[in-house]
Image (cartoon, rainbow, N blue to C red; front, side, top):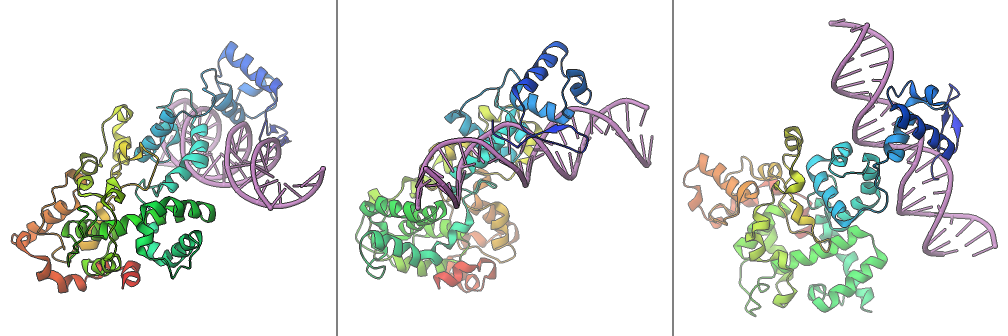
Length: 379
DNA sequence: AAGCTGGCCAACCGCCGGCAT
DNA sequence: AATGCCGGCGGTTGGCCAGCT
């Protein structure tokens, strides 16, 4: 059995891995008498262990209702879902998985699920898309170099069009997988997603190129990326010459996606897994905005979920009109960031909903709240 | 074949809260 | 109210093991 080598503490009590003989003594005693006081148990059971060690051995390994073996896919999804609500409350999570111990779930999380979420571009702590992936443009040369190397070209030969070429996408990902960690893969995918959204032709497959970013996309992206629309437009110019086919646009980045029920209800859902949560659990979980369905397919980078409302408030608080205040995008409930914003603005200025982006452009240009390293990168 | 490395996981450690005195 | 005991919990560690060089 794996574990620590046998040793004794200062009281002469044995530590380290349990022997089959010790296990049997513990089982025999508890089956006959129950565990009673753990402190008193070792001497009564004839074990040279501390009570705590006996308790852990019993609860984590010897208990008859322990379920052994690999976690099923359903258990996996449930753990992720519960973790998004409860955080590192392993014992609380374990109560929803009969036969699984908190220790086992904790280990499984740390060794498997955390990595899986990272690969998906999701922060395993917040269950939000990782914002540190947003420095992808800073890594653009590196990403291009990797992709170019894979294509037998120099990075100078490779352009944004190549990055968006669906036929090259898989090859690029393969190259990244062999050269980089999951973070790089996620960055690469996110970069593609962003450029595709910025490409005005993406949804319609038309060859004409509008002069301005689709206001709808601009709002979503400027919100998500915490940059102001002008900088976004600069980025769009980078993608202007790209004319990907409509089929290359990931389904989760279309107008339809942003309007989809899933996106509109990225809220605590009330499915079966949520049943049995205490009010305290739910209260602890407030602010978590990614529901279970977001994880159902472990396939690609998740939808561009806006940052928490706190972030949004920070971005625009006290700064007057928001870029999208004149557009009703119709997103729902707690994730309707724009609507919240609009409500906030309306409360201070009833005319704000009629204000245009152009009228407020200089203000946005001075908006330091939207300033971050993106500003530098894009400029 | 031998050495190295990272993944995995049982077990330990330290802290905390509830309870009895 | 203060103190000590006990069980529970989450974080961390140590060492086995498999895969790689």
